[in-house]
Length: 123
Image (cartoon, rainbow, N blue to C red; front, side, top):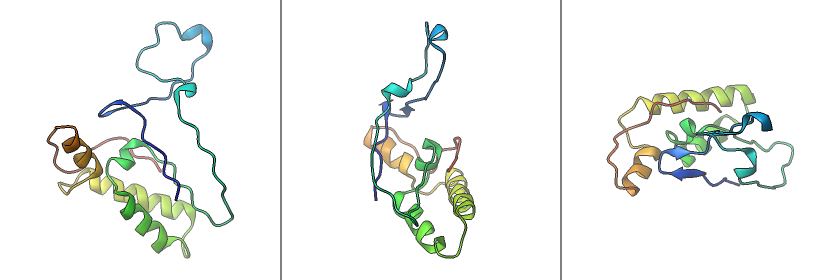
């Protein structure tokens, strides 16, 4: 399993991809150009499942929980059904008071946060 590294400027301030024409880049604030991102190379095979998701997903779903859903659904479900289930899992977790990856990260940075984190959620 290849897991990319989260890219943040500091806690709770993830990179924000911005693609603008060169003529509009002067004074750009609050955005990161594609050249700032890490790149990864890996081999994929037929049958591999790739998960691309926003920080709103990863802030609310522990890796092992996502893997469990994927393994359970992989043989009998479409990719769209798996993605829908993952998004629903993240949405439910974002509204929960249960431990979340975001709460764990907040504690590691000296902040108190209980439960999930409402945010944009795409997978």
